[in-house]
Image (tube, rainbow, N blue to C red; front, side, top):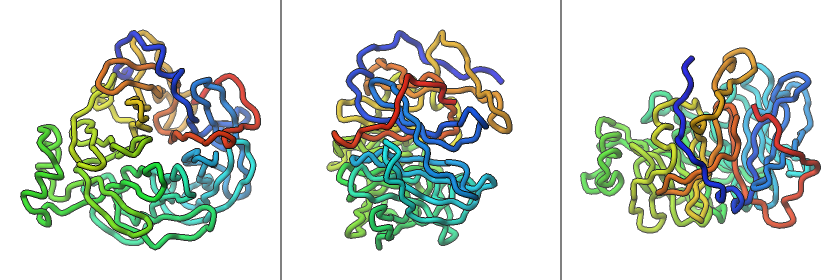
Length: 366
């Protein structure tokens, strides 16, 4: 298997020191190689802590994580080893206050969809549930019912919509989110289509051949009001709520108020379009300083590293998590070896909620 493309250096040295928050992902226990723990990596120190939710039969594998929110809580999904039966829980960064939210059945590895997404504040979490058969704009992406649950009350909110399972992101207040919905081209007037697609040639070329157009759409979870924003997928709301980064032909930066879109680049984004990273969502976060946190390819000159584990992950090349300043070629590696099949999330706990039980120098995040 040939190595992946690389990103040309040199790397910047000032992006990580000014980035604060936590990356959370899965962590394999060294004793048996199973994914049964959560790893939280503090930025900028890169100190790593391991969080161990209770293991109870048949829930032995952590498949997905999201957060932390402002209260230092991480949402996680545990499944049985054969998949299809899962429970959703929350736990604090310090390993305390573990709480079951709900259990469900569905497809192995995605009972609650590809990206269960915890809001930055307020305790709402967006999950996908299979309630109907609906056609998607993408043949490889199922349409499900996007449901909102509150982890404190363990109750489902009334607001629900059909959504393509290809990205959900919350606004900072936790009351509104963006998701992807398939819209029939015939239902749009030429003027509306022009407004929603914009003038960028790459975006227009992407949707011109589609009868069902993937549309990044806003949902107010209190009122249920929805509003199409811009054609595209994989939306990420900026940490200040002023803009949304999405993918349509290439990456677009969309103003949350005017909906004006500007094609956007950063170091390595072109190479990312040359490869498949499986179900990973990139970027991970858009910070209000104009810095994007994203799945990246190795930097030129670094050794090729592959997964040491068996089954379908055997010999898969590991990738990186990087920071980059939008509109420039400046970037810095945060994690230099992580499996692209894993889910990674980023969050910023408020002071006083960022305590971890034990931490140490960053280990091997395969």
